[in-house]
Image (cartoon, rainbow, N blue to C red; front, side, top):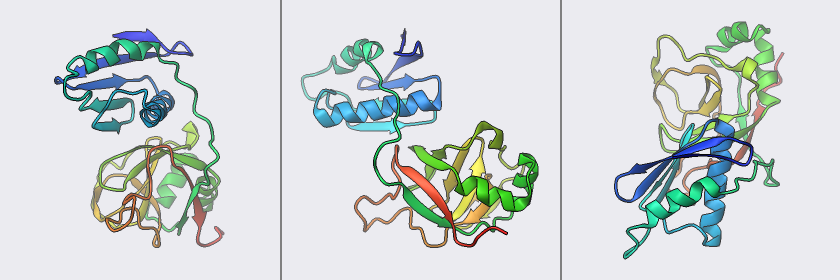
Length: 224
């Protein structure tokens, strides 16, 4: 099912099993705005009970909808969603999380060439951008951060690395991310965040980053 949104943008609602809905949206911005509205409605009690809310790049999964005796909750919400008014995202008033970065990644020169700038400019451009966590995934604590202008989007590496160190700061497509643990990866690595713990099971919440969180990267050393 599809319907026009408040700015003429369509969303598509697909059933997932007996108790879930997958909402497909046209852009990252509308996905973030829809996800924020889902969280707002859950907080004020106007959303039916839902076990999981999982945002993606262009989707939001609502799973475990309804409670005992509410078998029609998914179908009822599917009918309502096209009529929701989705407020646009705002900058918010929360203070941005600062992640201190040493811009010493092995792909700085390659990224600089793709951007058409000197290597030192990679740090300046990246640190001057305010990012927002669009969604989380890949590994516990990993956030997909948006904010870079489209002209700074870069492809993934043709040959992924078999081991990327914990704290590595990478770029892929329009996203920036910080690896919360060592793992294989194909992102372009431009730096290291040595002092940031993205996932700590003894912390509440365990994840430093959550969808909607504002993030700024602060150079540990002034770029030359």
